[in-house]
Image 1 (cartoon, rainbow, N blue to C red):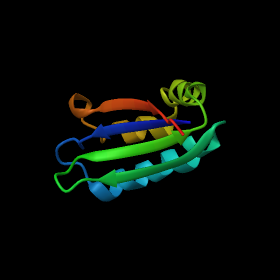
Image 2 (image 1 turned 45 degrees about the vertical axis):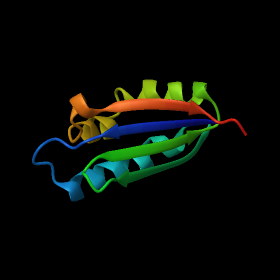
Image 3 (image 1 turned 180 degrees about the vertical axis):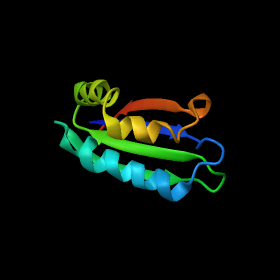
Image 4 (image 1 turned 135 degrees about the vertical axis):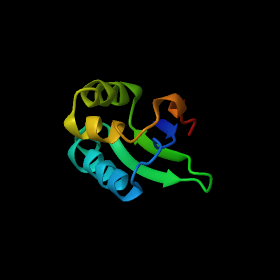
Length: 96
């Protein structure tokens, strides 16, 4: 199993409620329809940093999703809220 963690901050002036709506669209229209998708959740830290955690069956599943997400309208909408300078993606392979 693969755990993908994307951390970021919102762009200055972003409306949090609108961001969360865009995030729900990514969940409903894109992520949950990919082969190997297990679970996705979005979280916010007290200092304003955000994290999106996605569990995949395999790394290839995550790669396929990333490729499709690059041009999907829901992802484009969500990306407008993310400060690209603060964005970081990490992948971890589970050991159990």
